[in-house]
Image (cartoon, rainbow, N blue to C red; front, side, top):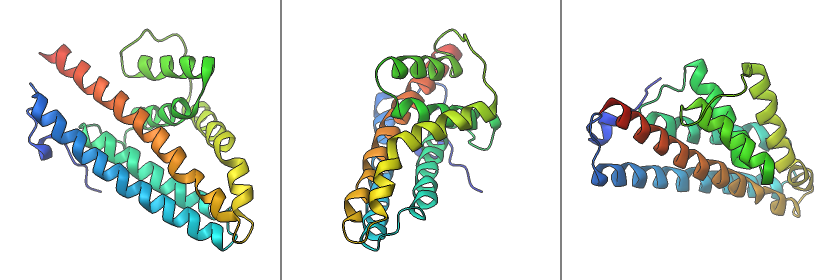
Length: 185
């Protein structure tokens, strides 16, 4: 498995420039748009056929692909358990609302070293939290997607959920990257 590092985008890891960060963000935006288009097409296509449940692993695969690309773009190894926990926390926080969003955001910030850590969770706890957030966000849509033809409307939830999580992930990875560079400078 290939992990793209920050060096791939000609960013000096000791002192990133505004221009190099813009380039990094542009590459990320293109990747998010492409992955979002794929999730839209497969969601609508399977919805037209009335297939909702098999869409879930395909969607999750695309979501994880996007999150892994984001981690790799900023130089983080998504194969490490710590990074996987962060990715799970990003999924949960990206889909949260209100007070739950504030608490989930604090967990992400604590994990990346931008806030004080108050709670410690196991990998299994994080999987349950992310799974709960995804099921809350997508359960009704996947039910509708199981109806032939009308199910295309249910498939439209894929790009909405994907973009919501990926925008949140892009912000958090950029903040983490810049904070790490400031500490190292």
